[in-house]
Length: 327
Image 1: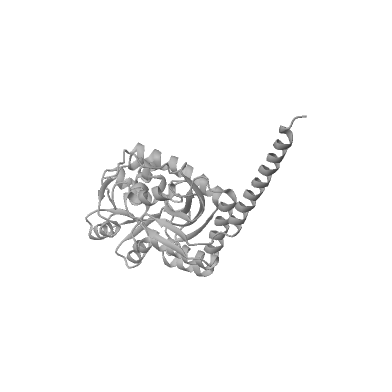
Image 2: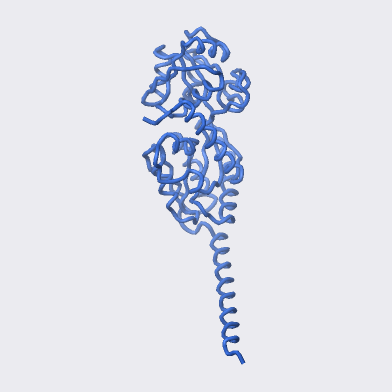
């Protein structure tokens, strides 16, 4: 008789029971998530656009979950500090990252980042975006994007940016690449100084977010030629998109999304995705996003993962082609 057989069967039963208890515990933890405060980290200045839309989301999620959602600004390295901290966190859903589209641009602008923007994160949901408006000084002798490009081909256009590798810079570089034109880029210490420079005639043009562009366009201090989004901006319905104006496929919106650390359980990702979608679909949240100058998006985890990969390739090619480097 093999006396080891009963012992082996006993251990086999014990291991199955432990496995079942473990599975039950995991399912219970996910079903009861969250049972303590959740942190939303973002790497931009408190009170800025990304911080604002992070708090809009956090407020509603706290209401849905009945648990605090704490928005933390970890400023530095163009969002890389916050991203690093989330990448190193446990994949339990309690530490999440709110990112903008520069998440997939920064690796090409800043070498030796302590994380991979794709491999070290779990996409959860993309929930807001905002296009930019290409504006010029009204004294510039152009009234359409076609005229503007012709003017640029003649070597006459200066383009304000809010810094090398910034969203206005990359939007302009994409346009230059599509139109085979060149711009002389003039970096300023932010979008507001760049806007002032365009209005004063110090430079010719700039891509600006709607909250900054629209009021000055409406009062005649700036002229809008095109919007960088996929659709026309609601407050400037007569202004075409760049794609409509002759460059199909052009798009340079600034999007906002939520990531978690790599290796999050699929069931937990699905729950977070659903809850964020529920939050963003709330009419009050929609109104707050519109008031902040954003549109809501409906891109779940799977689609967000595709967008991250697509944008990583797209912006990497543009940055490499034009040899754009962070200052």
